[in-house]
Amino acid sequence: MSPHRRSAPPRRPAPAPATPEYVTLAVGAPAHGGHCVARPVDDPSGRVIFVRHALPGETVRAVITEKNSKIWRADAVEVLTASPDRVRPLWQDAGPGGVGGGELSHVALPAQRTWKRWVLADCLRRIGGAEVVDAVTALPGTAGGAVSVEPMPGDAAAEADPNPRVRERAGAGTRTRVSLAVTDAGAAGMHAFRSGTVLPVHSLPLAVQAIQDLGLTERALWRKHFRPGMRITAVAPSDGDPLVLLEDPDAPGQAPTVLTAAGHSTGRRRVGEAVDATGLGLGRLHYSVHADGFWQAHREAPTVLVDRVVRAVLAETPTAAGTRPGDEPLDAARTAGTRVLELYSGAGLFTLPLVALTGQVHSLEGDARAVGDARRTLHDYDGAQLSVGRVTPAAVAQLGRFENAGGADVVVLDPPRRGAGREVIQAVAALNPSRVVLVACDPAALARDLGTFLRAGYRPAAISALDMFPHTHHFETIAVLERG
Image (tube, rainbow, N blue to C red; front, side, top):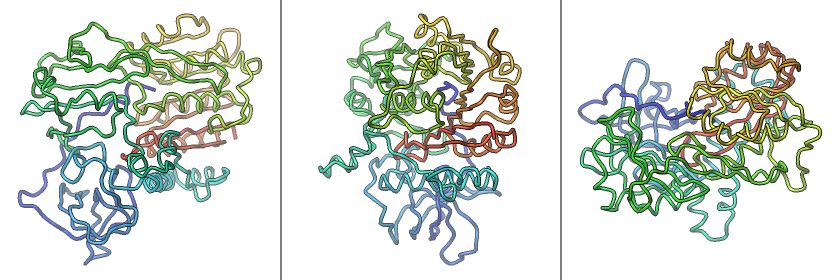
């Protein structure tokens, strides 16, 4: 998972009118980014307004939040006709006029996944084009290009729990990493949607219990450490106690101050993460990463992604599905010797199981510290060649060659939100691997990259989507491609 997936600084949109402007909207289909497409009820063919905190089929009263020559945005502040999929918002701080990061918490969790399925299908159609839609539609279970978005195992179990309180909290308490900022008044907060303004937050319902128990939003213990503009990162690793990292706004580039759960300074800079790879026959995998380095935030994401991606790379029949009950572990005798090129490899989440099963992985990552973490984790594996550098066509061509063995058999790409891009994909195709596994965290980038792969002679053999970010519009997609 590439460190470059860190969120970009909030953009500063064109200001809303000084005097609030209200409009009554008929709400249509979801749009990429957490909005719905809406139009004024008295002008059904009029200007499109992208409205948040609404649901398809609703009628809402909304306040305009941004206007420019290309786009108008609004927040629904009153629901006049409600959707049956509307629920009491899980996180009030992320409601209209509030912080970003919980924009779907007013939507029932199954309906959130329907929302994301619609968005993925729309991106494949609008951005990928007819060729991409036809190729995806030809796959089993994806009629109309509509790939189902699957819940994470724990979230699915919570949804099915007989206790209504557990069901109501499904999808909450899953984030092992939380980023906050300090308000001008010295309180923990987050940025308002598409804004540099930091608003106070009063709870962190998406965070795992270990982070909630820190009390960052309410305990005086932390206030004495906070300074306006400071960035706060709370980390709850799978191995060990939580940490709180504070970045001083007046000392850019300086290492963050690291505090224990009791608010005491500590020299601890790394955390241990464990991934259950039993389904692959590898037992429990252990990683060492910097506390402020990139690691998948959902507590189940590393395990689920390792299982899915490694099977996508090495299973005899291409698949984007994970281990099922009764599945046999991968046959190490068959997978040994498979040559894998891994691009955007981060701290080695996939590198470790792949080299354990194949003995040959060349990886490339642009973040030197992440590669240092991977080397620490993989120091016992001579077959792992870990390189630091930008993913460019030249680098792909060089690393895709394996000494005395020819080119890569499989290429894995896990690019940042913008996607891999045409030139990198063409360089991958020039290696002529029999299989490519593409992990995408943005459906628009996925659609563009799939179109490029199709034009380079590859066809999707399997695709799956995972709801790794419940209560937000984000999700992850895994696509397996083979030569057409």
